[in-house]
Structure formats: structure tokens, C-alpha cells
Amino acid sequence: VHLVESGGGLVQPEGSLRLSCAASGRTFSTLTMGWFRQAPGKEREFVAAIFWSGGDTHYADSVLGRFTVSRDNAKNTVYLQMNSLKPEDTAVYYCAADTLRRLRVGTTWNKYDYWGQGTQVTVSS
Image (cartoon, rainbow, N blue to C red; front, side, top):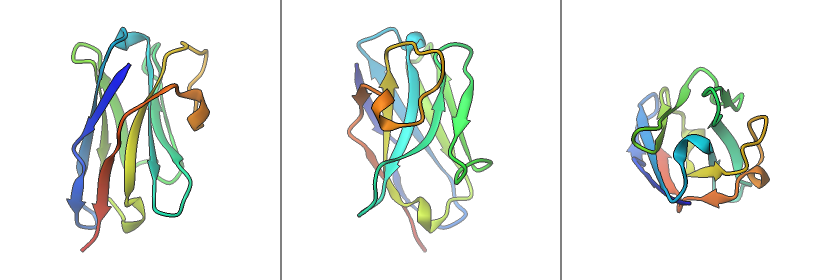
């Protein structure tokens, strides 16, 4: 599976960005897709995920109510809409694919077997 993120950039606090992740190489509808982020000096952390079956979504507490994950299976793309951004959201954001069709969404990095290259999101005035 090949994953390519886009949509990162510099945004002011309380602003919005939408990240996209285009997937190829596997039937997209069978993939649970996750978003993770890593800030300098910190470990990679779970942000959000959308299940391969039924489209259930899961969020980290820190982004709940501000971020929305969605997918378009016809376009082989997963999105992360980020609203009310805060400086602490600054990080490299990665999308990831879980190809194993597990029974539940994974919220740890080791549940995902393919990763994109990452896109930088900087929230600053």
C-alpha cells in the first residue's frame, strides 16, 4: 500500500486545515485508516481513525470535537478536517493503513502496517 499525505501548512490558532491521504495498491474499502502525529521530542501519538467496515470513527481525547476523519472509497482517500487548531497541534501528521481487517479500530501505531511520509502542520501566530 502506498500512502501520500497532503494539505499541511502554517495556520493561525483557531484556524482550520484539511489533510488528505491518497492510497493505492490495495482495495481501499478493506483498509482501516488512521492518522497519527509526532511533535519534536515526543512520541508518535494516535489522532483519529476510521474503520474499514461501517466507517466507525475514533478520536484521541485531545482532538475530540475539533477534528473529523472521513473517507471516500471511490477516491481511495481519507481526510482529516482539523478545526479550532491550537499551537499544541503542531506536529508532523502521518496517515497509516491497517490491512488486516481487524474486528476493531487500532489506536496504537503497531496496529498499522503501512505509513505515509508525513505532512507538517504548524499552528502559530
